[in-house]
Image (cartoon, rainbow, N blue to C red; front, side, top):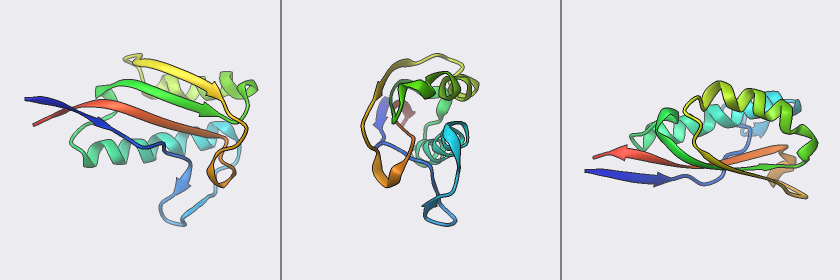
Length: 104
């Protein structure tokens, strides 16, 4: 039976340090996707099984740089919403939450 996993928003916290060490939207997007991948794997899913993402950017001016990294990982092109927000936790530049298929 197939199910879904709904993740909370992931920001660029480095699990080794507990802080945001990545500088710039590209580096933060890479860390966010590594964090999201770990959450999905723990739930029995993966990036390739994502059907919907919601992406939050501190500045929509960073969209092209964010999208260049995003497209490397989400090759299946899941449905996506992307919005600019005034602030993210811990001063993050990007946050991504996802809905993905899990196998049971």
